[in-house]
Each structure stands twice: as structure tokens, then as C-alpha cells.
Length: 148
Length: 143
Picture 1: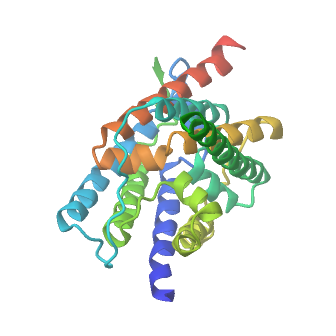
Picture 2: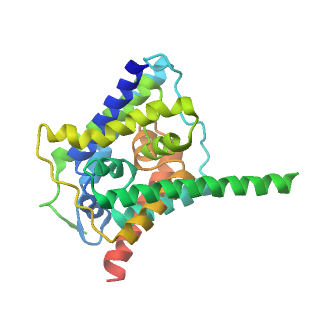
């Protein structure tokens, strides 16, 4: 058990170090990318490009193998519909991202700097996730009621 | 559009991006899991108990990354700006939106695009467009 948890721990470290090296833990860098009408900083495009270039290879290898190297079944998302929740959720996320220049990964890394602003953001993010869970549960119950 | 060449960091961003892609790719290759941070956080808070351990381990790694890196280089702190009200509002929207849309910059933007998923491409286009529009409104239209 301890061994298996070392792997996700090390991957979190690598992921977080990558976010820092890339500059994406700095909100001003992210906002510089999102500011296409101002002084545009294209760095984030290279972060995505570098990540996807490596990621494509790893995901293809995993898919060809069919099982994870440590034995677990691959848990790829099964949803494929491009529906309203996906696009509306993405848009709501994008507004929050543009307001602060912070998304969930960098938020956790910035929390590691013991930054109070990051703490405020992360607590609010947890509350937002809870609210979404509540809202989707209520709307599902309403839909069930309408059906039955 | 004016490119800010002074602040542009092509090599660091490409290298950091490759590290992110390696971590996300290895999560799937070794563990069979999607390292989308919003999903990992949500699952660590409320998922099935047996599924929480790896998520908490991953998040602990993310949290300790600055401390690890500080052993080798002196990294500047992130300099998060804006009032607490604004940060709280932004965090609420990021949390709510990432769950409703089933992912964020890492889940859709890195893992989803690496899986060549059209659904993730659509989500990425949606949050990028909203991000561009929000910064435009806040920095140019309103000020």
C-alpha cells in the first residue's frame, strides 16, 4: 500500500514542479496569456504544447497496452457528448480563471507557498465544487420526479 | 496584438510543459488514472473512500512541490493579486464550473487533448474563450 501511494505522490511532485518551471503558478503569467488585447505573453501556449506533445505518446502507449503498468484497469472518461453542461461549465470555469489567473493545479502549488490569497481561492474552490454537487443532485431529483 | 517579448519564457515554459505532460501521461500509463486536478480534488473531498488515498497522495505531492524545488533553486513566490472578495469569487466559479464541465486546464487541456478527445477540445475552447473575454472586459472594457 505504501509503495503504491509513493507513485501518485511522486507524480504530484513532478506535476507541481512542472507547473512552477513553466511559470503557470504565477497568475500574472497566465493573465498575460489571456490578455490578447494588451501585452500578450504566449508562454502558456508552449506549456500546453509541451505537455500535449509528451502526453500524446504516454496516452497512446497506455491505450495500446490496455492496462496500466501497475496492473489497474485504465479509467478513461467514457462521456463523449459535447453538451450544454460541458460548454457552460467550461465557460463558468473560464470566467473564474480570467478573474484571478489561477486554475486548480497552480492553486494547490501556490498553497504550498503558504500564500493566504491561494488559501482563500482554494477554500472557495472547494465550496464551489460542493455547490455544483448539490445543484446537480437537486436537478437530478427534479428530473426523476418529472419522469415518475 | 502586441507580443510581450520581455516576459515571454519559451524554453522554461516548454520544459515545464513537458514535465506536466510527463506527470499526466505517467499517471495514466502507470496508474490508469486521469490527473485532472479539479477531478482529483473533488474525488479527494467526496469520492469513494478507497479512491481517496491516491488522490490525497497526488495532491500532497503538488502541495510540496515548491518545498522540493526550493532545495535546488530559489523560486519567487507566486504574487497572487486581487482582493479576497475577488479571489473568493474566482475560486467559487472555478470550482463550480470545473465540476459542471467535468474538468479544467489539466483534465481537458492536458489529458483530454493528449487523448485526442473532441469533447475535451470543445471544453478547452470554451474556457479559453471565456478567459480571453473576462480579461478583456476587466482590463480594457471596464478600465
